[in-house]
Length: 117
Image (cartoon, rainbow, N blue to C red; front, side, top):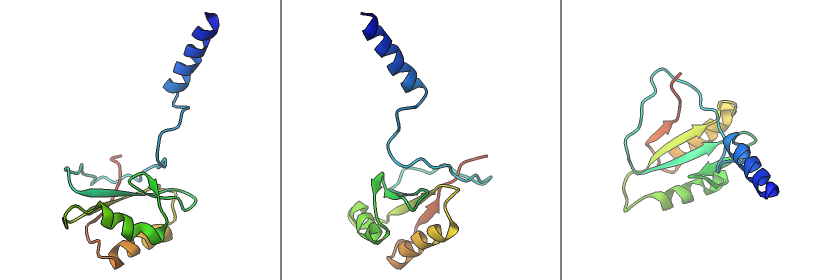
């Protein structure tokens, strides 16, 4: 009986301390004083993490697969709004590489995610 109670105690402590990892890449967004909340839309979120990690809507992706994955996210030819969620520690060159790939493949509506200070 005490073993079960000890297990539950440890489990809830780990949950409350966020020791059990969440899904997706963890990023620290840069801050901007002009940040705005986005309205619901047809969107895809590209997350650029440290060590060249790249995800589209939480799925690991290589940069060469970006256009294909984003084209799948389009609904009936609607315009797709792409949000780039980049860790502030990511090199600018990596961000430029991703944005350049998007522009070359016809994705014109690109936003960079930030947080309010």
